[in-house]
Length: 197
Image (cartoon, rainbow, N blue to C red):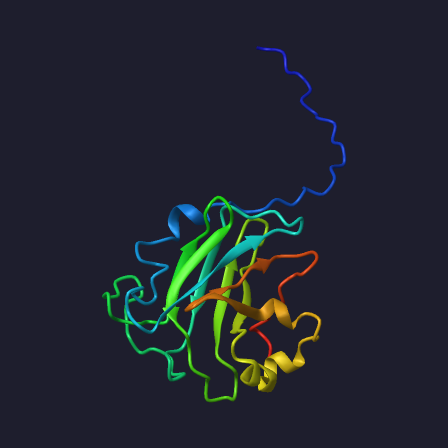
């Protein structure tokens, strides 16, 4: 009979397992053909919304995903189906773009009209990025709508020193730049859609 050995192991107390981020996996599965083209760029009502996503150190994030949703030019939500299979002239209001190596993204869409709730024209913007375990929500208002922005109920609740982080500035005819800073100086105002705004 083989000799039995004592297999009692000494246990040492272990510390807490360090947290880890998920991914980044976004750029591999989430983008789709035509995702940034909410409106065909050659149509007369098309605008360009573009910018970059930056981390807390001010460095571009090369693997984030940006989504937008906006109403049509009359401020009505789209009733078209099939954001993934839209035709060249349709408008679903939804788009998704992967950023490039410099953290830059670009969409073609429609400048939305004012919503019925008295809000100024805006696009909803969602950010997925490394180190962000839950996606972030914000809004992109338009810098060439000063009167509407001054009357917007959400903008009125934001610290005046930070309102500019929610404004896409015109940088060419039909083109607006909207940079997103995840933290640090100039951090974008993010919204919690689980609570009343």
